[in-house]
Each structure stands twice: as C-alpha cells, then as structure tokens.
Length: 297
Image 1 (cartoon, rainbow, N blue to C red):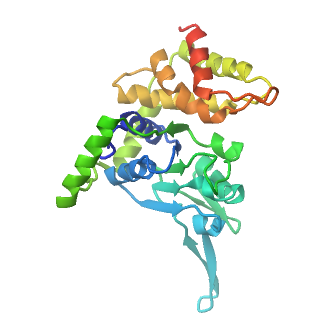
Image 2 (image 1 turned 120 degrees about the vertical axis):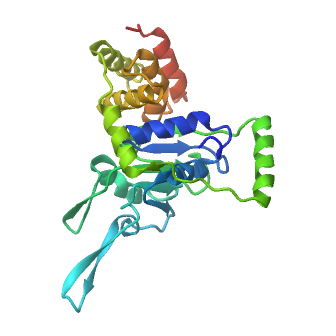
C-alpha cells in the first residue's frame, strides 16, 4: 500500500488497524491529498467485493441500501441490493450529502445488517466502510452528525506531503505513463476473517483495561461541558490497540499500543470548540496532554 500512496505509511497502517479490528475509517483532508487512492489501494489488496458510493446532495437512501421492485410475472417484490452489500465500501466525500442520507449507513456500520421494507439482511464479513471527507469549511459540505462520527472506529488525517515526497510522486507518474502499474490482491476474504479472529484473541491485562478507562475518563473531564468521547470510544481503543499489537508482532496489548491509537480513535469524537468560551481547541493536543500526565501501568 505504501508503495502506491507515497508518504502515507501511518495512514496505511491505521487503515489496516481498522480492517483487522472490524471497524470503520473516516479519512479527512483537503482535496487531492490521496484519500480516495488510499482506500482504493486497500480494496485492491484484498480479493473481495468492492463498491464506491459517490456522495452527492441528490443521493437517496435507496441508492445506498437497495430497493424492492414489484414483478408482475411472479406477483412478488424482488429486492435489489445496493452498493453497501460489499466487503469494502468507499463512501467518497461523505459530507457532500445531507445528514439524513449519511444516517442511512448507521445500521450497517453498527450492526452489519440492512433493514429495508421491514426485512433485515445480514452483510457478509469482512465489512469495512472507508469514508472520505473534505475539510468542513469546503464549499457544499455538511457536518457529520455526532452519532455518525461515533460509528467510525478511528479517523485519519491526511495532509500534503513534503517536497521530497512530491518529487518522488511526480517521478512515479512519469514511469507509469510508459508502464501502467496495478496492485494485485495479496489477501483473500477468508484470510482477513482469520486475522480478525486472531486479533480478537490478543491478550489485554486488567491494568491496561484500567489505563484505557482512565484515559477516556480524563478526556471527558477535560471536555466538561462539551460532551467528550462516548462509552463506545473505550471499546474502540481496546479493539484498535489489539490490532496494533498484532501488526507489531506482540502477543499482548501494552500501553504503547494504546498511546499509538488514542488520538486516531478519539480525535473525531471531541468537539472542536469550547461552547462556554467560544475558543477553538485542538483534539490531538488535548489527547497528547492527557497522555503525558496520565500514569502508565
């Protein structure tokens, strides 16, 4: 993956963390920094089904979930699955659709199922939603509702790479102009399911669980009057830390694994403005401050 998206080593690792911990990812950043390319590269590496949903203001829930059509010949309604019935779903520019349309993903992201016309249909595992989002203040965008944000296991912020990386990227495009390259699948969906099962069995000591709980509680105290991360955030940190331990070859979760995923898991769950004083706050700086002063087991 990192060979395809230059300068994206950390985002690529976090994307794998979400996949292995059976979570979903929100990739944020300005247009043209490689958000969509990163998501499509992950899908290319897995021999599973993939779909891309381009979110626009005129999108309807049926365009995402599917719909039922009445057939006169059989006298029955037949369900046509929507693009969400895939292993990896790219929700491109999700904040260009209204919150009503965004909420169509809530059930499938939280329970891996879709209910249409009173009938519930399960989604095949693995199921990963990778949503890209342009900056909030870009023209024609809507803010994501808090319940929608809370469904994402973690968020990834992508920025413009340095000049050296940009130079290498340009050279890579010159080479591809003469010899187009593609990414071959290296994993089958059965392999991903097996790896997800192994990740869920990574050991977590009681002291590490208490460390995670104290971390989230301290962030909530810092966020007093502004909400703060929900109870789902603690579970998300635990799952992401297990995946990080698995990727680093560790048989158990250590505090360093928790520290590595704390900001990606909680930053999008923290309000960006103090409602009491109207001051903007940096969620990542707040989390770093808490980690610095929180006793490590």
